[in-house]
Structure formats: structure tokens, C-alpha cells
Length: 226
Image (tube, rainbow, N blue to C red; front, side):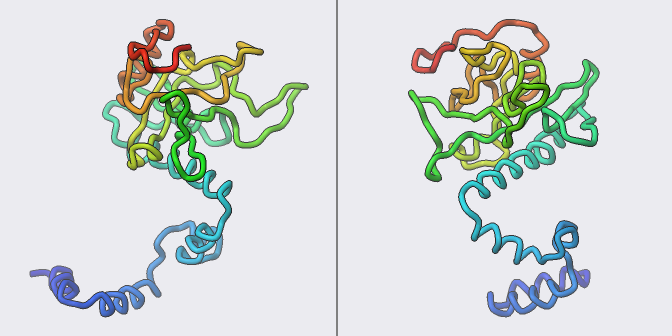
């Protein structure tokens, strides 16, 4: 039995209070994440600050968690793909490349309202626009324009209770704004499970994207049709 195994065996026999004392002793000498140094605050303080934060801040944090989950736990596990995301701010969150080329992925969260999944006409909702607005060359920069990314990945944690649960759709299959077909509609309906428009398989989404086909009519009559 190794020293570590001996310690683990002893810890298993300890009470919760005793284990907490051991943890506090170790915590004094161990940094949980480099971000602690970046903001000069302990992880416990950072978490307490988030617990005190207003809903709009938490919404942003959840969005960041969704992006990180996709990049690390989803994209990072895909076989045959490599992360080629360039440094800087872009109209997409992650760029992945395989033998067929590069796919730019924008990650969003399924919309919540009053801490519950927002539903409309039996469908979930995803808000597809930038967090902050502005103007450039006389045009608003908050809307997404078609062509700015290739795939939309929506984290379905609000409905599915799992951060690794995503639905994907080719960007060109998103609904346009009625007043300007160049722009992606802000509130997009999405199913709670895969259909012939949305898929939970990243490679299938890429296949649909590269296939060049038009957005199909949803097979389920209860879905929202374009």
C-alpha cells in the first residue's frame, strides 16, 4: 500500500469535521485554480461574490460555463478534430478543424426566465445576439449577421440538467429577422430533443452544414415551423 492509499484509507474513517480540518490544512498551501492569482482572491471569496451577484451577472456566468464546457468537455473529446481558435475576440467562440476544413462554433445557453427554462409554443428558446451593443460604420454590432459563424451550439442544461448536453444547428438554418434577412433572428425556437433540424451529434451537425441543403420542415407537427 502506498502512502497516498494509506492516507485515503485513514480519511475514509474520519468524521466530516475531521476531514474538513484536513482540507483546511491542505487548502492553506494549495491553489485551486490560477484564476485566484489573476484576480488576487481565493476561490472561496470568488464563489461568495457570485452567490451575492444579481441575476444578470449569473446569466453571464452561466453562459461562460456553457462555453467552457463545450470547449473542454465536448470539443476536447471529439476524435479527428483539433482546436484552432485564434487569439482575440471573434463572432464565434471555438474554431475546430478536421480533414474537411475549419468549423466556427458559436455557443449559447438555452434561455431561462425566472430561473426556469423559457418555453413558447412547446419549444425552448435561445437568444442569438451579442451581449453588448454598439455601432460600427453606422450599423449596430450586437446582431449576428449570416456568415459570421458556421454552427450554433446550444447548451441545454436548463432543461436537461446536464452541462454537456448540447443541440446543434447549421448557422444558415437559423431563422432570419423579418425586417432584415441579413441578420439572425434574436429569439430562436428549439426542440428539447433532436429532430431533423437540430441534432445532439456534433459530427451530424457538421455533415448537415457541409451538405449545402436548405432548412427542412420540422417533422413533428407540434414544433414551430419557419
